[in-house]
Image 1 (cartoon, rainbow, N blue to C red):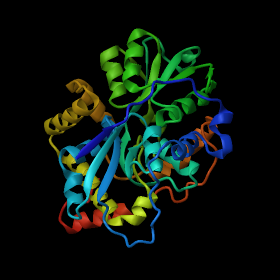
Image 2 (tube, rainbow, N blue to C red):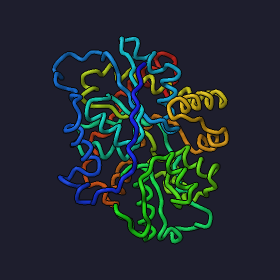
Image 3 (cartoon, rainbow, N blue to C red):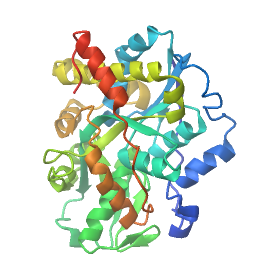
Image 4 (cartoon, rainbow, N blue to C red):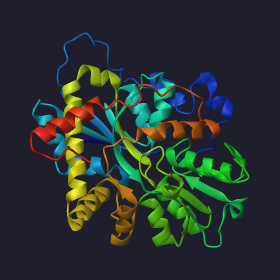
Length: 376
């Protein structure tokens, strides 16, 4: 199995709203359009009239993050490879540092499927007029918090402070801007009453330790690392902001989804079916494995891909905040999109067709018929 690594570029000052929304594309529209202009990798789909057949290779992208645990387990335990091998399809993996990079690769035809945050998936879908991707399953839910320095006890205390998020327009970035706005604190792409700096997660930990930033809205395990390794305290647990009306249960919200290229899915439906069967097998393993075995597998993967394992305390705290489920929690997406629009990071657009559970339904049926678990 071949693995390609993509290194995130250092953070830079964000463009203004006019640039972000140029042509009505929204935040990721610049990446979607830029991909076609800057890459030599051809877009798939030139010969969609050919009979559907399994692909020679499935190119899967994901992050070296705990919230992408199904991807780590599926590759480490050979669950994807086992399902793909039946039709002669090889698995190739690419490791990304942030959603926009994975979206660009997906739109450029450099990968065929990716684990992403829901906000980048929504932005890519709307920016491409629905052509960029389809969400075919959920992967992780929950596990995001606003952690801050001691002495910051409410929203008012954040005025004049600097906070970090993993990426501009990403799922946690939108959540933070929405929460601040609801409490009367203005933010914009160049500052505001609270400065928000998109920063790579590992750098966020170091900046917090150095006193350069005052807190961050982060996914696991990074919120746990700031709490346990750098003395941060939890100001907001995002689970408290979801009452269950949109997602079916209080505290549940989407953190990671599995998306595929519509072109690839149309040309190789059997390959996407196999990917979904492997995805469900990974979720079953995560949700039934004994904790020591789960911790060992995830830490081995994180050490190999991110360069460092997590302490047992961090991993235990982080896993306690996360749920791993194939449910895409599609009821949350209109709210997520509305929040991005309110934060001036997107424009209103239809989400019709964003979520397609046909592959998931077939994979569940196939696993049930085979006597395996149907998936979480």
